[in-house]
Structure formats: structure tokens, C-alpha cells
Amino acid sequence: MPKIILTGDRPTGKLHVGHYVGSLRRRVELQNSGEYDKIYIMIADAQALTDNAENPEKVRQNIVEVALDYLSVGLDPAKSTILIQSMIPELTELTFYYMNLVTVSRVQRNPTIKSELQMRGFGDSIPVGFLTYPISQAADITAFKATTVPTGEDQMPMLEQCQEIVHKFNSVYGETLIEPKILLPTNQACMRLPGTDGKAKMSKSLGNCIYLSDSADEVKTKVMSMYTDPGHINVSDPGQVEGNTVFTYLDAFSKPEHYKEFNSGYECLDEMKEHYSRGGLGDVKCKKFLINVLESELAPIRERRKEWEKDIPAVYEILKKGSEEAEKVAAETLGDVRRAMKINYFEDQALITEQSKKYNQK
Ligand code: TRP
Image (tube, rainbow, N blue to C red; front, top):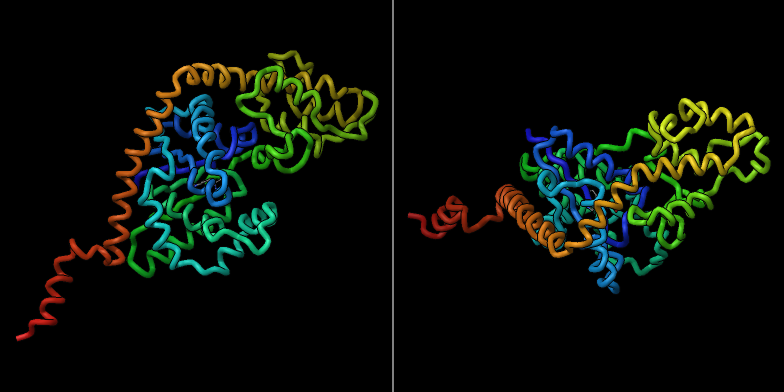
């Protein structure tokens, strides 16, 4: 069985370092590993519209932002197919058939949906499309026969729901769809990178994000104002490493070679943490080190972005080509689905023969 990756993002804003350590960095590694037969990266605009119906302009503007972020982190259109969800109408049709295999109470129980509903304060006015987006996401995944979905922990309930749909479809209509597996970040800090204010979620509205497209100065300012241990007042005081955003970011970003390269004075992160806990290591020193670590990763991303920004028509061309290629694959799967459901009437000679016999016996 071919190894196929599908994953994606909603184009509701620029991508930030949480997206990077949670998923983007891994995608590039997987892309360059050569272990996968196909890689599809989806800009999920239709999904973004499920809670932005009144603001399609926001989605429209952010498609190119996300595409630029993809290209600048090193996703390579020669190796990965980048596509726009709404350009593949087959996904909508698959969603429509899958909807009949899922109950309303099941989508209401989806933990991601539950928390998102609460966050958005929909109250009694939940858009039907929003409630059913896990089903549309199952269509995204199965349309490309994806075996592997590298994504963040928050997407786990989406994957479980997709697996249920696959089982249900296959048991009702016969083996047709491929069951995908989620591929989570291996590092706990990457699983859920906090905002710069130490809050659990990085979000544009909280103003606590470091964006991949931030300038070096912006990154510096954001790190210098990062939440640390509020009890760590004097350098000599013992400090807390757990829940200290600077250390969480170091957990997510620092590599063994950085400690020597930036003259940290430590061999490794554990040694630095140990000194901080004991007392005698100041926040400013830790932050300066973190700035160097972040810059070593972000500077090349920023440079590549600058290059792509000079040729926006080429970026749209990549999306167009990717979407066209992706549509062919989705159309094949839709064909399989229609055949399995036996709603492929005009190519079903046996059906026509059977019906005509029924009416013309003797
Ligand atoms: N729901 C994902 C998010 O909010 C985006 C997404 C859409 C996705 N379709 C997908 C992720 C398919 C993985 C697979 O980030």
C-alpha cells in the first residue's frame, strides 16, 4: 500500500511558531525523508468558511499568506502537492455521503468541536456547516487515500471521527476507504506550544504569537517580554522551569549544538534548567539565548519568504497546479465511492439489464 500524507491548515491568519513546531517542521522532514509516495498539503479554505461565512475576505486574503509560509519553511512543490480545498468539488460530494454515516450526537460529542463551539460563543446559533466540519475533514483525508496525517494533538478527535467513518463506510458498502493514522509531535513542548504570555493557546486575538513572518526585531521584542517565573525576582532566587515559557520554547527549539554555538555557558538544556532552578541564572540571559536559537531557525525561513514574495503569481500558479493534480485523485476516490454505493447508474450495465428484465419478462 502506498504511503500517503495529507494534512493542512485553515487560512485564517499567518502561521506562527506553534504551527511550526507542532506540524510544519515535521512535514518538511517527512517530505525530505523520501519515505512517502505522495504528500498533499491542503489550505482548508472551505473549512475556514464554516465559522467565517460573513467574512470570506479574511479567508481569501490569508490563502497566499499560508502558501508563503509553507514555501518559506521548505515545503517544496516538486515534492509536495499544495492545494486549495474549495478547488476540489469532489470533497463536497464525499462529505455529503459521509454525513449519512454520522449521527448529530456523535459530532456534538467531538471534543475539539465542543471546545471550539465554546470558544466561539455560538450559543444556540451553531452553523450546520461548522458542526459537520469533522465530516468534511474525513472527506479531505480519505479522498487522497491518506495513510498518515501529521498534525497537532488537537486534531486527534478529528482523526478518530475519520476512522469511524472509514469503518462504517467499509462495513456498509464494502472495503473502499483507507484508514488513516495520526502522526503526533514526539516532543511534549511541541505538542502545545504556549503563547508568549504563557497562556495555553497561541492566538491572534490574544496577541501572544510569534509569527514565522515576524522580523528579527519583532521576535526579539516578543521574547524579551515573554512570561517566565513570576516568583523569580532576583537572579540569585531559585526559579521554576515548569510553566516557564522561555524553557518551554527552548524545549521545542533548541538543539544540542546551539549550547556551544551561542556560548550559552552550558552543555545542554538540562544543565541550564538545573542552574535556573538552583538560582543564579537570570531571565535576560535565558531570553537572549532563546533569541539566538529562534533566529537560527527563523532567519532562513524569513529569507526564503522574501524571495517568494517577489513572485506572487508563481505562488498562485503552484496552488493551481497542485489543486488540478489533487482533483484528479479525489475524482478517482469519488468514483470508487459511487461504485461501492452503487450510485454509478450510467456505468452499471448490470443494473440496466436487471431493470429491463423486470419489466420485460417472458
Ligand atoms: N482542522 C485543521 C486545523 O484546524 C485543518 C485541516 C483541514 C486538516 N483538513 C485537514 C488537518 C485534514 C489535517 C487533515 O488545523
